[in-house]
Image (cartoon, rainbow, N blue to C red; front, side, top):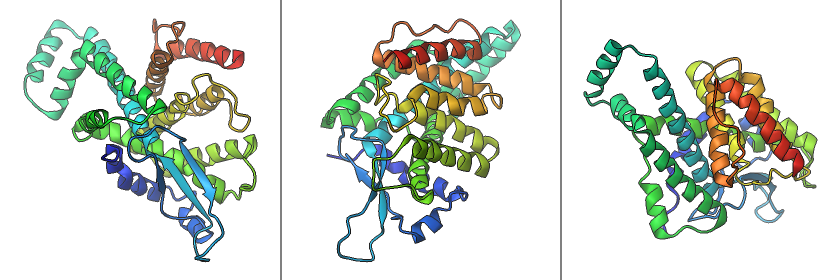
Length: 320
């Protein structure tokens, strides 16, 4: 069986990590961190974890690195699909809202320009067919659910290879995914750089420190459009974790899932109104995934809707 197509972006994730100098990965490597990322479930899944850092067994050769990071490629593939669904659904509604505010003359010009083929107009024509966009999202969601539960068939892997990862929108999705995965990996690297205790299972304080170290390293080392994309990627990463934890249960080690998400959203929400819209759509994808029929509906500005979603999700989390 072929490996997951998301492997195509591994080098891009490595390149992004090289830009995040605050964590000082090079120094971490000198102090025993294996520079090679190890992969799990590379040929069909299912997801067995997200990313983990391990102590290497002490055996020959004696100069082997002290620790290594393992990531689930099945999870990485699911994360890319989550980025794709959220971005396409968000953009589809954003275009609909923008068109509703145009005059007749502006609409005439828009539709005339839409007839000329370009990467942008091809994507816009796709977004205007909202039913097709949401149907495609529902189809992708089925594959995400399969990845959480079992090994994919050859035919299902062929579907993953048919996903758009090279067009203008594909590259935009790739960028969000790359930063989402970079956040996951930097979280694990942070455990090493912060000298956390690897003899035990970890604790809440260490997980909070690793989250904070990873977030602020990305936040402080990037700027402009790249930083904006990175923040969207981090939101996707944080939401993705509740797809593997449908009950929103407390594992006794990590921060509670919903508090974890809003901790970092609240830090950036004033910087770009798109973050609220993206986060709303991410929660709506999760609601479909777990059949949460009580999720508040979108009936106003995104920030107001997100306040209702937050209240709903916190209530679910604390009732579990």
